[in-house]
Image (cartoon, rainbow, N blue to C red; front, side, top):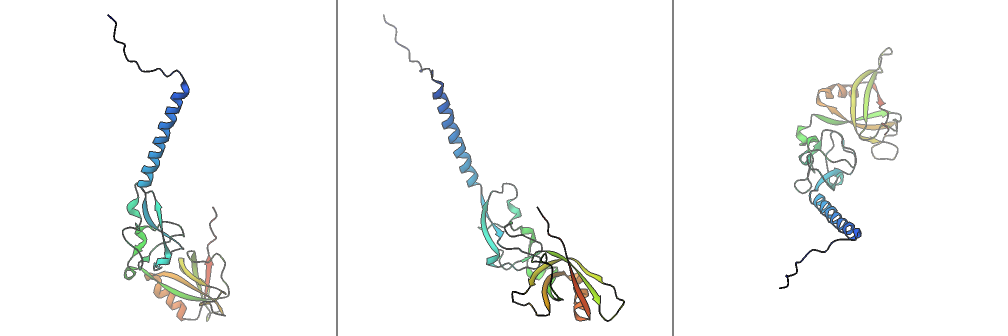
Length: 206
C-alpha cells in the first residue's frame, strides 16, 4: 500500500527572496507610519507678521498651518475651532510662530495702552515693531537736569520713519505699549517740556 504524500512548504533556498519580503514589509510599515502621523496633525493659527503687546489681531495677522502637537495641542489656538480676530495680544509673537492661547485677551482686559511719542531725530534701525526699548527723559527747563529712565523694556508697537504715514518732518513717531501703572508718568513727560530719548537693545544674533 502506497503512503499518501505529505505536503511540505517549499524551502527558501535563495536568500534574495527573504530580503525582498523584508523590504516589502518595511515599506508597508513606513507607509503606515506616515499615514498615522499625518492623521495626528492639527491646524492652528500662526502669526503672519510680528505681534506685539497691545496689538489687535485682524485676519491679515494670521495664517493657518498644519502641525503635529501630540502633547501641547491646547497651548495654541486651533484654526478649526475658533478665530482670535479682534482679540488683543499681551506678549510677543514673531512672524511664523504659533500663536499661544495664553497671550490672547479681550481688549478691555489689557493691562496697558499704546501711546505715541514724537522723538526728535532718527531712531536706530534696531528700533522696529516687536523690539524692546528703554525710554529716557530730560527736563529741558532745568539746565542741570540729568536724564531719567521713565520706562524699561517698552514693547515697540509701530515706528514711523521717512517712508511716510505718520512720520513728522521734525523727527520720528514711535508707538509703544505702556503698562497701566506707568501710564501717568509717561503722559506727564509727554505733556511737559521733556526731551525724550530712546535706547535700543542690540539685535540678537543666532
